[in-house]
Length: 232
Length: 80
Image 1: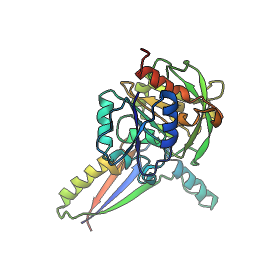
Image 2: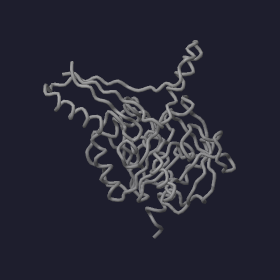
Image 3: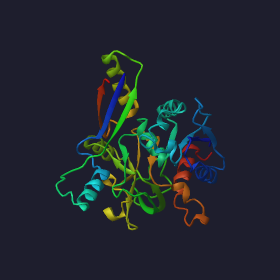
Image 4: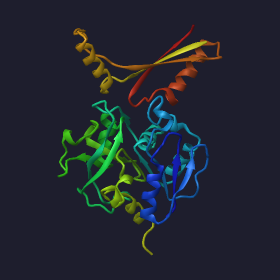
């Protein structure tokens, strides 16, 4: 499986992401500078976490208008898998590939700690190596992760089963105390209508190796590898 | 020609920064403040001299970049 990671000025998780993808797929991804206008051939395109353009104007707003993004949108519309983590999720909403917006955390502070996520479905290309209802522990590190969507959009997301990850307690209960940023319906990650574009605020790429204290995040990457590279 | 864009959160969208300002004002003794909403002011210097064209151009900029219309409203003032 081939993958590409887009690098914008100010992102800082691209190497963590490359490590996770390499572990899961055996192939090191291409790193693509945002001024390029065409992505290399890839089965998975990733927008990593960080602080593109210093979060100027709005998080992800400037990166969403970078030259490479036109091709990211074209690839997404063609059905190629696209993953946006943290700042990458913000960029995906800013460019219109995912609905809603990521707003300032309800508590105003930057939150950097481990959280628990409930995996809502296992029948997707991003979650097939998890069980539905399984709780995983992964880190968050963001100041603007408070997901918001208007009532109609939210009803569509929920009705279509497009919320793949929610902040939960270690037992999988949804409780405001387990929600690090106040996001609506405890949403941590959503997919587009077609199911090929995933955005999530937490960092599964930072829990893939025992040396990081947990490998709970690796399942996301092995899921994609399994979905896109079926056993011969 | 100058243009001034004011971007504010839509009503109904929670504004945690406005809330923090409200609480800080209350702590300073300004108890009469019922609500605070924080926004952004963007000033542009345009080479356009026709106010109608300038407005149309700035409104297009707002739709494409300056505001996120999922959560924000914008107001354009032309002149000066």
